[in-house]
Length: 171
View 1 (cartoon, rainbow, N blue to C red):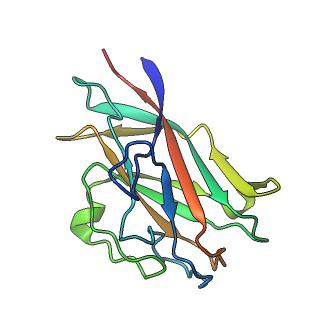
View 2: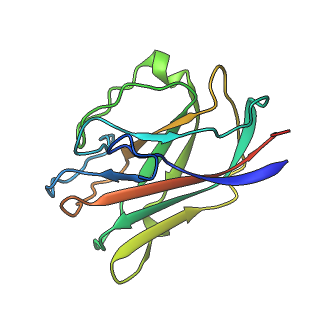
């Protein structure tokens, strides 16, 4: 098995170098079940080529999220991971995932409120030892849909970077 670190591709433009969700320029409090989405549209994370050409299985080993800003109480975010792209709701709106969409979910990674480490300008949360196996049918991508699980008060235009560490069966 080989390991690779995969960063999300841009959700702000078609540029492959991007890696952020930039939320709208407001400080509206999230409630449990609200979607976290990009200010420029209802965009979410895409993790490209998470498995090799002949492999359709892998395991998420760890996940990292970095937030710009240093609010007093960090968010609790459930990152739902899907093997098929799903519809996404506007930022700070209740999620409307359907039963059919949830049937394509391969797992959930929780970034807990108490897991954030604060620096002078940012916060980081690394969830390790996840050991979440997945099987992808028809694609080599995973799609991440972040949902707030607490009453989080964000900073205006806050950014959220997310990456996954994947172990797969690449030949």
